[in-house]
Image (cartoon, rainbow, N blue to C red; front, side, top):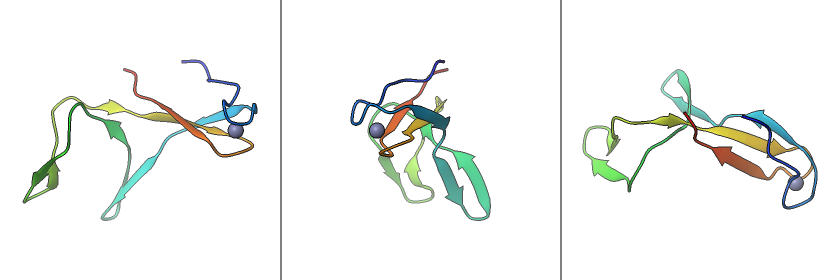
Length: 71
Ligand SMILES: [Zn+2]
């Protein structure tokens, strides 16, 4: 996937990255899942099987974030 741009807020360019998920001693990449969050007693929220990793671009000037969840 190509970089988005220019930034809709300030007109500058984006740098690709991702949002880090941090849990007890581990790191991961945020995922997109379909639907509304459903509470679970054991794990916080129930997760559907299908997850799509989220790629996020950050504007180099103003910090605006633009995210994409593509396979
Ligand atoms: Zn910007």
